[in-house]
Image (cartoon, rainbow, N blue to C red; front, side, top):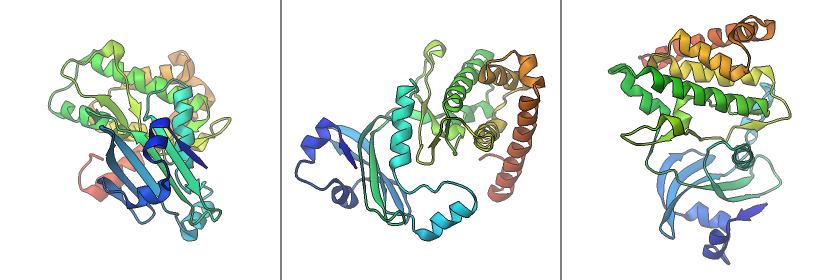
Length: 271
């Protein structure tokens, strides 16, 4: 399996993209035994490459016994990025993808995306609220965007699996345009796509999002606004319908557990 955008076809003509990326130098952002993420430049533009070298049978079996689909390489992220584009959601733009090898434990794959420049994470953006609380309309705009993105993902059978504020990007600016506020969802290498979303993955995504927002002054009113927009129901129905009532209780319990775990691990409440 191989896809190269036309400019990459021309630049890498006659070369093996897998070997090229394996040996390419760049600004390394993450280096694991099975995966390396780095930034490089081509024709004056910056790109991110994520190269997967195979996870090994131990990791695959470990995921299977937990009833989780193992992430074997770049294919899941490639599919997720393209699906998000189809749904009109902002994310990274994929420009190259390759996969080779029949052995799932040793499969080699890569994905290359355009770099998102002059941006910061939503977590970093909200961090300043510890000292200076935001205006109501700012939180309202952020809550609305998060709820709408979450609803579109989940209504279309997509779950992120690392659904935290740090994986939403927004443009750095001194003049925040709330009417045109846009978030770019990143780090989709563990994302899954199905015809409908199982409850366990809705629970995981929403618990992670709530947990990552706990320290930034979101009020009960903000939470209710998110719930109303996410479910596309009246607030009364969203809170009293048996299915949703049970789901919100599970989310509250799971996010509190995540918060306590990270507090013990890191020695402070911020994730």
